[in-house]
Amino acid sequence: MSNLREKFERALESDDKGLAGSFAVIVDGISDDGHALARSIAEAPEVDGWVIIENQDRLVSGEFVNVKITAADEHDLWADLV
Image 1 (cartoon, rainbow, N blue to C red):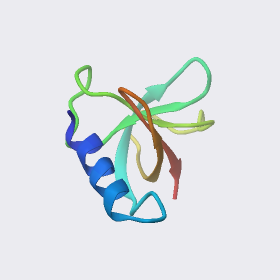
Image 2: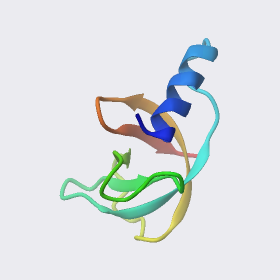
Image 3: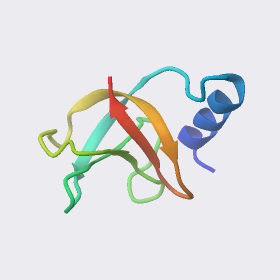
Image 4: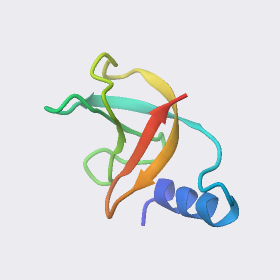
């Protein structure tokens, strides 16, 4: 399990509103459907899952942005810009 997913799951368990905090991710690229594909600095490219930022095709690879996790699936986390 990735460090990012572990942090998300701990936050989910400890926060009665569901999600806690925000953090910086680096954008690695844009998917064909216009979502930014990012990762935290603790995640390895091509090994760990993505942090997917929906409808953010204007972000640039290499750019750092702050996000708040909104959901998780088996491999990836979904986030909004903050």
